[in-house]
Every structure is written in structure tokens, then in C-alpha cells.
Length: 428
Ligand SMILES: *Cc1c(COP(=O)(O)O)cnc(C)c1O
Image 1 (cartoon, protein in one colour):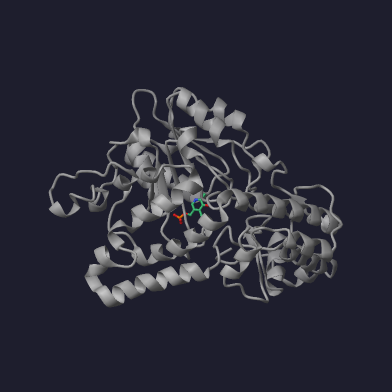
Image 2 (image 1 turned 90 degrees about the vertical axis):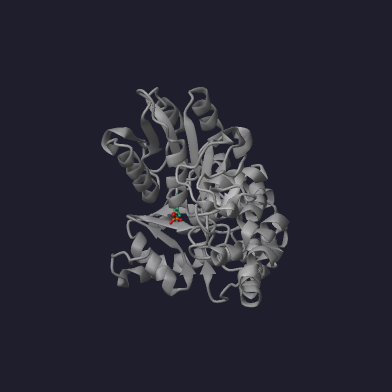
């Protein structure tokens, strides 16, 4: 149904909703009726299923105490593995390659400390110039820990236009001194989706380890990490996967690395059978479970149990299809309704390069975001001039998108944003 011609009427948006095979999922979520939530790429909304599974885990604790580890309704001892299994279809991985643990930043530390093995003149780490700062801080400190100066050992592939990174430039930067590459699947500002398959092929042919940060694609876009030969990946579960603020993240390690010792070991890195033998020599799990460290954060993992049921039912392929339709519709609406107000669409137009959010640039982005919030439309601001709008497939309708753009039009026409200060909030 992707198309280039719309009438932009409310009736058309209603019709698009009627044709939407995923429309029933909206009722699964707690949605404030007065509010249009377009920030699910930063923090996804709570679903009834996620609430239920969290309450079930609390009940396990309440009624079973320590026995919740083995006898809980969702036994805690194997919950990370179980949720890894359920996540695997979202990233195209084997169940044994996937585990729910840590956060993006701690998992980067874990996997870089495991897979960054500088040798001879092959000592550098390659990233990109537009990536999320936390990923860069982690890489810098990993280099420092090994005695390398990040100023000459961390290479960031530059952007030609400040928005996108060209795959050609990444491949050109894969020189013989590069040991490891860490790249996002989707750039957090412009929403550009990188061609991971191509990058993985090129990295493999040069013997370079490739790690992917899938924060902005997991739950929005299908992946084939196993088939593509990606070495490792990290993600969080609180964005498109709706597992709650600070919800435990996840990681993927390709089966070809079975037997690789974790750089940062702990007793949860152990094979399950031996963990309680309490030996002083670790017997690491033969799975991605080896990259866990300590006791899993059960209550921050529990909402994911219910949330992943929704993804299993909706399927990631249908979610991606609707997401592309929503962003396509939103871009056309913005161009049609807001063309005279100086907005620039900063995300790629092509489906193969587009992530789950629409990114628009405007010199007054901060003030416009504040004005939107006053109207109960929740966008997401990124310094200095970007408004990110994420119409999340599971709980955003076409009418929601239509209404949001109409509101923006009123704010712009009446210059309502001018009453706000041009200053960012602490959490933006
Ligand atoms: C959201 C996000 C993070 C956040 O990392 P945490 O460790 O979960 O705080 C890191 N990197 C990217 C690319 C992100 O989008």
C-alpha cells in the first residue's frame, strides 16, 4: 500500500486505519487519550501484557521467596535465556546466540573487552562520526584500558552532510590496522538504516570483527545477524520493545565464536549445570549466556516477557511494513501541510535506508517541541535542531499521524512556539 499520492483528508487517514492489520494492538497499550505519543523510539509505552508479566514476577517473589529462582511462574534462573530465545526471531539469530542482560553501554564494554584483540599493527577501532555518545565513551575507555590513545586509535568515519554515513566510506575505512568495528544499525538522529549485510560481508573478508548497536532498529526492523555473519550485537529493550525505563538490554554473539571467553566474567557467565558448584575456575556457558556477568535484574526484565508476546503475534515483518507506511504517510503530510514553515526532512526517503522515525530539522526545533508538549503531542528533541517523530507501529494510528501534523500546523501558523525559551530541558 505504499504510495506517493494522498488526499490528506481525515477520511483518508480513517480509511488507512481500517485497512491496518495491526490496528488491534493499540488496545493492548496504556495510552493517555488526550496525548499523541511519538516518542516510542526513546521510551516505549507500557502494554497490559508487560504489566501482567511484571506483576506475575512480583507475585513469585511474594509467594515463593528464594524458590522463585526455580519454581516461579517465570523461573528466574533461566529467565535471561528464555527471553533471549524469544528475542532471537527479531534479530535473525539462533536462540543460543541471544541473551537478555545488561544495558547497551555495559554490553558494549563486555563484548569489546571480549572481541577486541589487538595484534601487531592491527590495533584500531572503527566507529562513525554520528553515533550515540555513550557508545563512543565506552570505546574510548576500552582503548585506554589497553594502553592505547583513543585520539589515534578510535577512527570515526566522517559524514559527508552531517546526517548520513555512506557505506562506501565505511568500507574505505576498513584498513589493515582496524581490529574491530562498532556501528549502529540505525543512526539515532537522522534515522538512516545502514546496509548491515554489505558491511558485514566486507568486514568478514578483511578479518575484522563487526559489532552492531541495534538500539534504534530492534522491534522496528527485521535483521538477519546470523546469516549476515555479524560477530556481535547489543540493544536495549526499552525503546521499540516497550520493556520499561532502564529495562534490561540484550546481546547477540554469533555461534562461530562459541568458546570465546567473556572479557568480564562473573558467576552468571557459567554453564547452568556448574554454576552452583562454586569452583574457582569458571566453566563458561556454550551460548551467548557466557557474556552475562552477575545476577539478572529480574524485575527490570519481567515486563519484557509480556511485551515480546505482542511481537510474536504481530510479527516483525508486519510491524516493519506498517512502520514504513506510517513514516511514508507522515513525510508526505509534513511536506503537504508544513512546506511554508521551513521544515526539512532529514531522514532518508528510500525504504531500504529508512528506520522507524521521521527526523525533521528546524532552527526553532526546541521551542516547537515545547509547544508540541503543551498540546500533549510528545516528540523528541535532539540538539541542536532536530525533532524526531516516531509513529510506532503497534500503537500509532494513521489518524494519530494526521492529527499530530494538523497540530503542528496550528502551532506554526499562530507562531505559538515563540512564547517558549530557546533552551533545552535537562532530559530532552
Ligand atoms: C538508547 C541508546 C543507548 C543507551 O544506552 P544505555 O546503556 O541503555 O543507557 C546507547 N546507544 C544508542 C545508539 C542508543 O540509541
